[in-house]
Image (cartoon, rainbow, N blue to C red; front, side, top):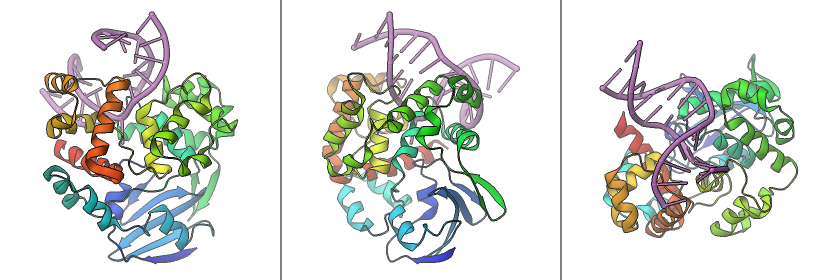
Amino acid sequence: MEFTVALNTPFSLEHTLGSGQLFRWERRGEWWFGVVSGAGFKVRQEGDTLRCSSGSDLVDNTFVTNYFRLDEDLDHILASIAKDEEITKAIEKFYGLRLVRQDPWECLGSFVLATNANIPRIKKMVSSVCSRYGEPTQFEGDTYHAFPNPEILSKASVPDLRGLGLGYRAPFLKHVAKSVAEGKVDFSRMPSLSYDKSQELLLTELFGEKLLLGVGPKVADCVLLYSLGKDEAFPIDVWIARVLAKSYPHLLPKSLRSRLLADLKFKLSIQEYRRASSSIRSHFGMFAGYAQQYLYMAAREDSV
DNA sequence: TAGCAGGAAAATC
DNA sequence: GATTTTCCTGCT
C-alpha cells in the first residue's frame, strides 16, 4: 500500500532514523527501508511530504503519524529544553530529529544486545537474530524478517544465540524474552505510570526479587524513552557521560565530577548513574530525553 | 565500592 | 597489524 503523509510540523527523516535509537533502518538511495508491524516498509522525505510504501494495510497514515510522533509540537518541546548554549547548538544542527514510538519488546531486546558494542555491531547482532528467528515477509521482491516474538526467542538455545555472535549477551536475551513471554513484564501498565514508578516496575517489581538479568538503569531508560513515552528519561551511555563531564560538570555531584575529569575511562556505579540522571533531568525538564538525543548526535558528530 | 570478566567488531594509531 | 574503544551489567 502506497500513501503520503503531509508534514505540518518540523521533521527530519534523516536525523530521526539515523539517530541511534533504532537499529533496523537501512538507507538505499533516497529511500529508507525497515520492518514495522511485521511487514516491509519504505519511506522517503520530499520536503513537507513523507512518501511511504508498506507491505501491510495496517501501516497507514495514522500508523506513521503515531510512529514518528508527528502529532506533537516539536518546536514547543525544543524550546523547553533549550536551557544552555551546548544544547542550543545541537538543536540547530539536528533540527527535526524526533523520538520514535518503537515497539517495547523489540526495543528491550535490541538494547539488551547493545552492551559493550558500537552501533554497526548492534545492527549486525539484531539483524542476525531477526534473520534466524524472525517471521519472514515479502516486500518488493525481497525477503525481510520481523523482530522475533518473545515466545520464539525464549525457546532459542543459548549456544545457538551465541552462534549469531551475541557472545555473553545470548543468555541475557533469552532471559528477557522469557520474562516477557511469561507475562512477568507487562509493558501495557507503564505508560500510565510516572517515570520513576515505571522504571522501578521495569527493573524490579515484575522480575521478582532479582533484577532482570542484563537490564540495568541505562537499558531501562532506553526502553522507557524510546518505546513507553517517558520523555524525561535520560539514558547515560559513554558518549553522554563524556558530554556531561565536558559541558555539564556543574550538574554532577562533586565526587563524581572530579573522577570524570581525571579519568576518561570512568564507569558510573548504579548510584552515580541515578544521581547524575536526576540532576540532568531537573536541568532539562520533562522532555530531557529529547535533549539526550540531540546531545548524543552532536557528540558523535564531533568525534568523526 | 573498586575492579574485572565477558566478547568481537570497528575505530584508531 | 596491533591497540584501543565500543550506547553495560553482574559478580567478587
